[in-house]
Length: 45
View 1 (cartoon, rainbow, N blue to C red):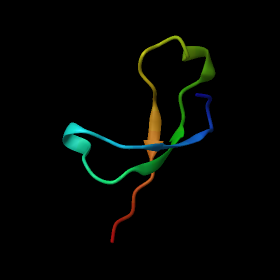
View 2 (cartoon, rainbow, N blue to C red):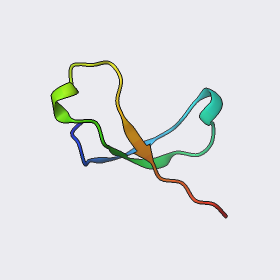
View 3 (cartoon, helix red, strand yellow):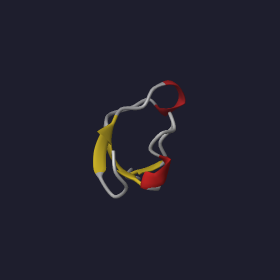
View 4 (cartoon, one colour):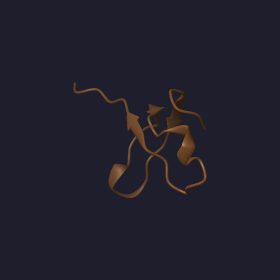
């Protein structure tokens, strides 16, 4: 995964619901970590 890419994510636990698009905002220099910083896109209808 690279910064700026858009992925479809499906949450679990507290973030249940349908799959949503998310953009990776984590710097590429942290690619050796097991976590990923992202921003999920949602709607408020």
